[in-house]
Image 1: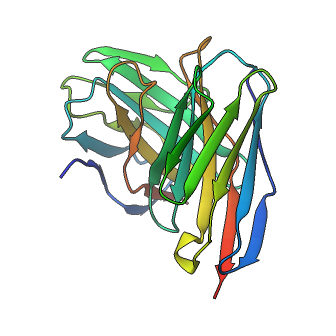
Image 2: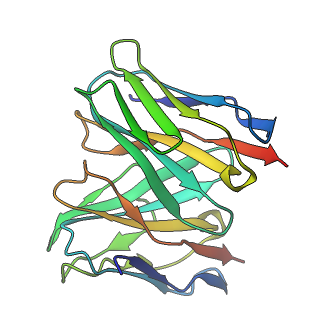
Amino acid sequence: EAQVTQNPRYLITVTGKKLTVTCSQNMNHEYMSWYRQDPGLGLRQIYYSMNVEVTDKGDVPEGYKVSRKEKRNFPLILESPSPNQTSLYFCASSPSSGYRTQHFGDGTRLSIL
Amino acid sequence: KQEVTQIPAALSVPEGENLVLNCSFTDSAIYNLQWFRQDPGKGLTSLLLIQSSQREQTSGRLNASLDKSSGRSTLYIAASQPGDSATYLCAVFSSNTGKLIFGQGTTLQVKP
C-alpha cells in the first residue's frame, strides 16, 4: 500500500530536549516536504526536498533542520525545541518537483512544555 | 505574495443538499490547484487536482472548477452525506516559488 509514515504520532516533551520526527514514503517519490498546521494560520511549509541531498527552506524554517540521505526518508529535527513549536506536523511526498498530487502522512502532534 | 482564502470558514447543511465551497487566490501564476479533505486526527487526502490549463475536474459527486484569470475555484459536492463531514482545504502550487500554498479550510458538517 502506498503510504507516508510518520513517527511518533504524538509526543509531549520539554523545552531544549532534542527530538526527531521521522518520515518515510514507499512510493519512490523525489519530492518530500514538511508542514506545520496551527489554528488560524493553516498549513505552512517548513522545509522541502527535491531529491536526495537537496533540501531548501519553506516559509517557516527557523528552529528546524532536515536531511535527505535516502530517497525514502526525510526526518525533521528540532535541536532545541521551544513551546512555540507546539503544533501538528505533516510530512508529504510527491513525484517529480512537487506539483503533482501530494500524499500526506497522518500527522505528528508535538507538545513542547 | 500568494495568498489563498476560503469562504466560508464553516458550513452546516442537511443531508442531501448540494453545496459549493469557495477558494480564491491572489496570484494567477500557478501550476495547479488541489482540493484536499482532512478528517479529525488524520492527514490530508487529495480529492482533485486541476492543472492551470484546465477548467474543471470531476470525481464521483465532486466537481472542482478553476478560473485562473479571476483567481477562483469552487468545489461542488452533490447530494451531500454525513460521511462528507470534514475540513476541505484548497491549495495552489505557485509557479514562482515552487511551493504549495494552502487556504485555511472550510469545515463542513452534514447533518442526518
